[in-house]
Length: 287
Ligand code: ATP
Ligand code: MG
Image 1 (cartoon, rainbow, N blue to C red):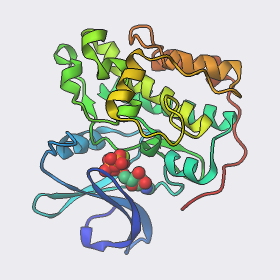
Image 2: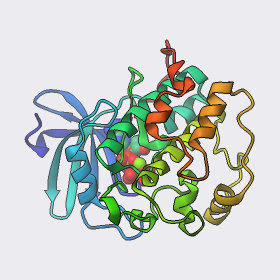
Image 3: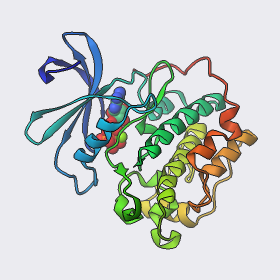
């Protein structure tokens, strides 16, 4: 176990995010490799991220489908360092950029693991709120784990509403009901979790075609344009090469009305997931 922050040797930067920087580090006494995320403690009003909430969630999660937290340090007043398991193949976003679109067998494998992660989180009453390729981490065993709880929430029964979920998360992956709670009405507790299912659907679609599904590649829409398309626009036609099972799976994730959208447990028995075959190899790695 890592007891002393100063036993950690910084090796390189793995990524920058809204909240801070993530480095690859070595624990000198054991030579074990970890990822270390440095974050400022105060609530960030612009990103609506909250370190204490992220720490609370990380401290209570323990699942093979969620990035594990190995320790929390306070190297300086107002600064927290979160020691995490190192995911040595990066994120689905970096793999997509390096290798291009994913084949369907791999997508089924990814979907299955992400659903297992969401099933675990939702059972713990945690709603992630920021599922997207860059928050799904991968290791060389092709294990996919959910990371980055910077905007996540613990759902407290009846007090939950879309307003309480904050506007953070990434608009492109946000469900219609979060973008437009007026049109989609007030939320039941079950509907709150449905937002993560929508985001997973958008994520898998993107991984299958190589670009964000609601806009043509190269175009940089404003968030208002994104919101209009997601809430009211015509849906793009499904990826051309998609099998019947994958197309149906995406449709089940991307039901506009949260009450009609499939739940995580329903999706876990969808034919696309049940047909899953173990992919025998991964595209080459970036780390
Ligand atoms: P963003 O706003 O982009 O989501 P963030 O500040 O919330 O970023 P994270 O998503 O936790 O921070 O991490 C930023 C980047 O650091 C990730 O996209 C990834 O490239 C890298 N990273 C984070 N955690 C790990 C890890 N456990 N192992 C390997 N790389 C990691
Ligand atoms: Mg992130």
